Length: 96
Image (tube, rainbow, N blue to C red; front, side, top):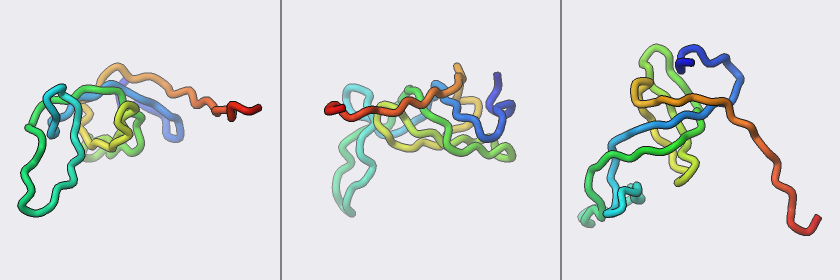
């Protein structure tokens, strides 16, 4: 299955790769810094799994929400692989 072939209205996720600022363990860092403040990370590759939120067929870009960091990343179709459907489960409160 290719990203272009995903039927509209269905939830899918995929593995993705992007270049972003990461810490010494390779985890993405908070991108918000103040003017003049030193950036706490360095550029590096980050790989994770993301739920596809928006895809742009014309530019071949996809916006994903990383399941680990909950941050959004925009990456090319070429930087995505291993697509699969998402099964949403409702959490029940612990006191039920």
